[in-house]
Image (cartoon, rainbow, N blue to C red; front, side, top):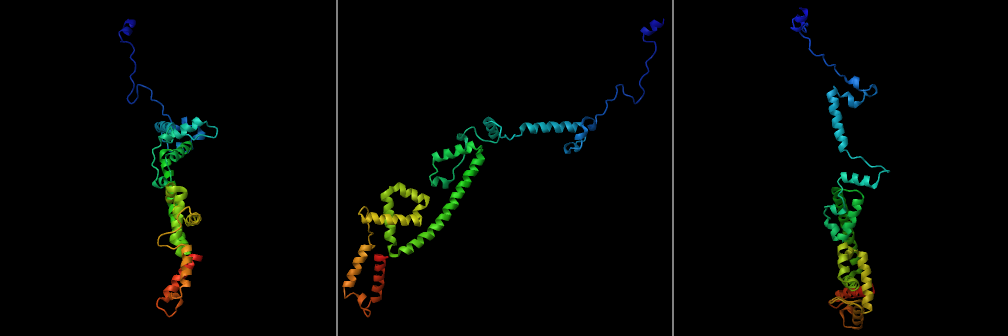
Length: 273
């Protein structure tokens, strides 16, 4: 009978859990100090972590950051390592991949396509990205502009001084300088000097004026300017006035005497200065 009662579930009854007790054993709480080695517990990165879920979250975020970080190559790195590094920083695959605008100042001084491509190849070799190349070109362009403006101001002062030194010969010497440039280099030289600012450089103007005078003396270029006396014509005019006893220059009491004296002074300056 006992066996029958056991088979029918009418034997000893299992005691039911009392109130407040879980049918499953409670999971033990995992504490940070249990999983972080003691020598690392005071690290700053752990002091702000309150629990294990926060620790896991911080670790995942750190791994994402490391995966996207750019590692700086070392002296032992290969060229391929450097190329990959430059690529991550935005450098195009080749110098043809740059899309930059050359400042107008550079174009004015002869920064043609050949020079541009040479610069871009150098920038690419240095690992620069598009934005960096544009900034470098802008800096160079601004430097050229500032230098040109400074030189222009200095040239203006120098030209004024040169004209003062030339006096009555200013117009003639300027014409001789221009004719020398045209004869020796044609329009190409003239355009290059104008664009570079050398056309207004008092030193260059003075040199070409002397060259022009030599060319004029040899009959290679015209040595006179209509309405402007040359050295020879000034000497001839002096001789004529000195030989003309009736000229007001010789008569201090004659009307126009002072004007003739001033005129002779200019002729002497032109002929013998």
